[in-house]
Image 1 (cartoon, rainbow, N blue to C red):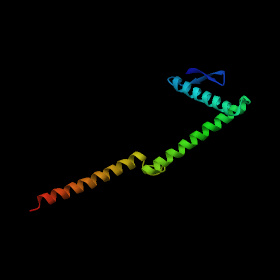
Image 2: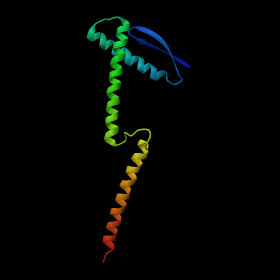
Image 3: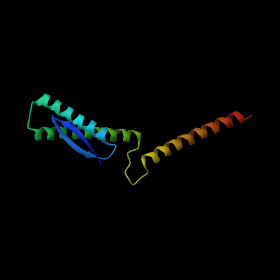
Image 4: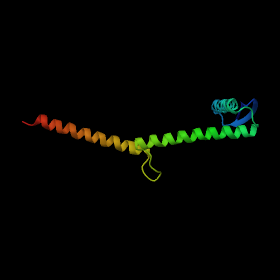
Length: 117
């Protein structure tokens, strides 16, 4: 188990993480620190607890927006089914197979036309 030091709002915290996740956790800490600085720039200095709650809400809002966009993209691609049906990959493979079959039929039709007397 590794540990990483992250600095948020001027305070350093030692955080345990899985081996190999140190850089990722460091980037997350920098992102949260950046959001704290942005919020302080907007509203001024506030109680640290309130600051971290507000930053958490901002990050949760960003995550919610991205989740919504991902759902829209999946829906547009036709891969937004539930767990009961085929997986997104299986549905994509089915669409590709259907497209290949359509092309094969067209090629066969062209070949028959060319072979006709």
